Image (cartoon, rainbow, N blue to C red; front, side, top):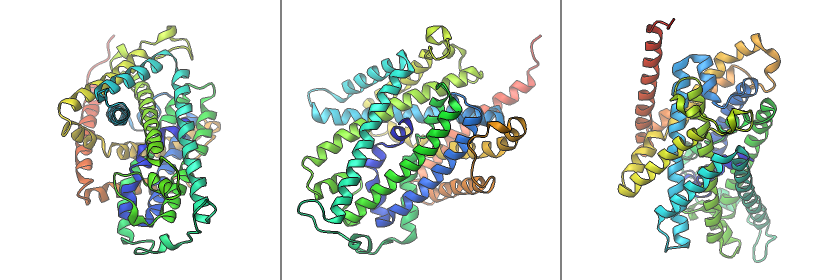
Length: 444
């Protein structure tokens, strides 16, 4: 449920409209391509995490495979990505809540959300899991109901509906109205919607049987998410012509309105609201565990290692790590209140392509660690990457291809350049730390 809930968010329910606007019915292919790329990355991460469970997940793997610089870089980049997105989600959820209760200002809603989820993450991991389970259950239920209604509408079973057939898939310019260039643009629009699956491997380290938990989550979550994403898009572009969709408006609302569901817009507002709070909750958890792992390895202040419950296995919560992560969220929101038209734009651009850099480090780490694990602990590989090493190299080429295509796109180019700058700065600090550590003689 964490895997499903962490990745099913506003990017699917609302952001998918932008993808349909550029790709048309071929958005189905865009989601298949982007989803396959994410599935391959998660398979690699699942292989390493099931063999070597760690709360730092891919940051720990990168350090073991490539050196301290890689672990430092992957960990801090991912932490920065999560805390920035956490602040964005809190702000977006506050705007929805403000629409329901205009008398309460958005900043007050942000404060409420931050306090509630900080408290939940400070008490015990089971509270985080309980919140996320019910959030994910609501989102999954919403998608399942949507898929059922959509299929019934396509078949003409619902009242006042006629069988649709393939008319909307082949009309208005055909299945590829903007050619393969539209499919590529669709990939650039939707690939980041698959970010969030990585939190599964971070959370698995706190389960009773991490290796088994990672294996099950990776096998099931990725396939189901592909089904939900691709299935939803297929229903949307079959029920309505793709030209009926608009960027910024939920295509789900359009379809529900078309099949006669009353108050479809308000229903989807509730679903999107829950999706935002769910992602906020998951990102706060993931960021706190990542910075805690960095502190364990001496890559973050040691003060963050303070754990409640005396540090007993399964009993403690890294409260200072939680507070450090949520503190940045509060600061980001305050900055947004002061400079709403500029601060978040720069921050989002600075992390826009970071996910791709992290995924590339995961693939590079798996290339280095696979042989080492087979030599040192062959029985630990309970989940293996398919067609190793060919699919790993192909995935790396795919990630590089997405980055190159983003550089050629006027809208996406600033994200790559800002993210490259942030990544370069973090990696420069990481390499400098490692070089300095080698030059300083050990204490006697």
